[in-house]
Image (cartoon, rainbow, N blue to C red; front, side, top):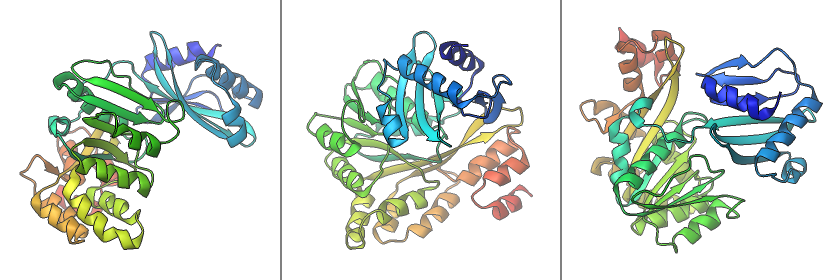
Length: 353
């Protein structure tokens, strides 16, 4: 069967990812659970043929990167089906791939369970807004919804720097320039520095990978741009620590001061399995207040979790465990699931009782 037909069928089924691994049948992930496409186990030759055809679909992309480095990351589209993000790699000497399905249309935040106050963070005119969480937690989708909100409501120049491009944005009220690392520019850092000379109002940076990139992000946020980016952390305090710890010790105090001035919000998210076999997002929301700015500046970051937890009446402050309890009380997730994903299971258990 052709890879095009397979991708069409798994997309129609609502899959989020497809796995092409030697020794296993074609497998796809749906609502966090793995399903086999058929029972036929793939040979190394079969995986090689599938992956070669994927490169053909991706505008006949050169496979030398995969053969030379053992990994490759790129995106491609099938007309009338969807966009796909492919990560190809070698394992046990054979070629393998994981393919993420990305719908052409940007979903409505409400349909995904993304609160309106998160999307409203896109109304900020400057500073740094971070979306954090583990891989596959929906960070890119949340960012795409925020960019779409800006694009639909403001006259601005939006620059997205991604590796690879996922959601494609049409020009609406804004101009949207989308750049892909390797295809359009050599690195995040090079593209970010160049973007500051391209009259941007909003910059989306796919990931803050190293302290040099973080340093340029700080400067960009200080000079009147809105920067949206991601980190693979859970929790606002962990995120702030991760940024500061990325810098050499002799720079950390200065970075704490800079971060206290430019940071606007940290959103952490997880995808949680529901009782009916679906998935639902749970969020921690930290909007930076004067008190939190002081905590960051004075290296009292360990106090931030307590501040978020105690701000139950403020919709711009939401602890992850409170989000989970709300899902549990509304009957969406089970008690066991809530405790599994909780940041403090013991405290969660007491609150449930």
